[in-house]
Amino acid sequence: MEDSLCNKCDSALNVMQTLRSITDSRHRTVVLSIHQPSFKILSTIDQILLLAKGTVVHHGTLSSLQAFLLSNGFTVPPQLNALEYAMEILNQLQKNEPTISPPSPENPTSETKTKDTIRHRSSRIREILTLYNRFWKIIYRTRQLLFTNTLQALGVGLVLGTIYINIGFDKSGIEKRLGLFAFTLTFLLSSTTETLPIFINERPILLRETSSGVYRLSSYLIANTLVFLPYLLAIAIVYSVSVYFLVGLCPTIQAFTYFVLVIWVIILMANSFVLFLSSIAPNYIAGTSLVTALLAGFFLFSGYFISKESLPKFWLFMHYFSMYKYALDAFLVNEYSCLLTRCLIWFDEKNSTCMVTGSDVLAERGTP
Image 1 (cartoon, rainbow, N blue to C red):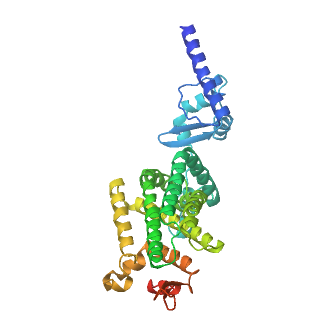
Image 2 (cartoon, rainbow, N blue to C red; image 1 turned 45 degrees about the vertical axis):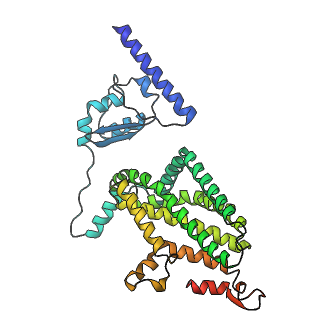
């Protein structure tokens, strides 16, 4: 009987030592629950989380647990380790936990400050840094998906560049430029819908952690944005380089830089839009339907299919509400700012009378 127990103890110790070597060599965190650990097994554990009836009694090292017991008036017997003794007196420890007396109703300011202190123990900067580290690890673990998105941007950019190659400056060139910009917006805004299920799946975790005071919602949004900013900028650069020079758009450094920034802002706007819909959609199916319907509506009222002047007055607000409108105007202003005085359409073959210049195109579109 004793040999059997010793063999089991040795086996458990070997398992713990193996787990410990994994955490040290691969920099991993191992979370486990264990029944009546021996002192040798406890020596392989860094942190102990002691729970009672859903509340945390102690979280820290074994030595800090012993100090915690002493501070509460309990002395660990020589024949027991601190954890075994703490488990025996768990109910007494829970009763001895300090309680925070509620503030008087005569001082509401003090009540607000006390609640804020209880709910958010960490500073906003620390919350952002911790969440930033978490999101960065998530991105690293899903780097294949990010690599696929980068290849997608590169592939679509090359396809568009070869379709609209050397677009020209005649009447056909005007129409092609508008079509190129409209398709670019459609591709960039619709390609972000794949993040909808990710946001919806994270929503219960986010609600639970923010409601329990682990971190603020604003810290979550700031950290998420900061993590994705450089990646989305890389996507914008890849797409812009692959399409801009093949098509033959405005050949200046300023115009190309502005084009990249517009692409970057569009992707950020699309991600924010999907994040907003994921917060109000009850499930993935409803969220997908909302994204599809709203993007179609924005495109319809952008001014690409029907001008602002031709819209009924009761639909005019949708024109200014459309995400497509402002991005499309930004593309047109950036492109035709190089062609303000250049004649794009001549009245006759002798090129004696100019009918349309770059400034005329902008005026017709209602773009300043």
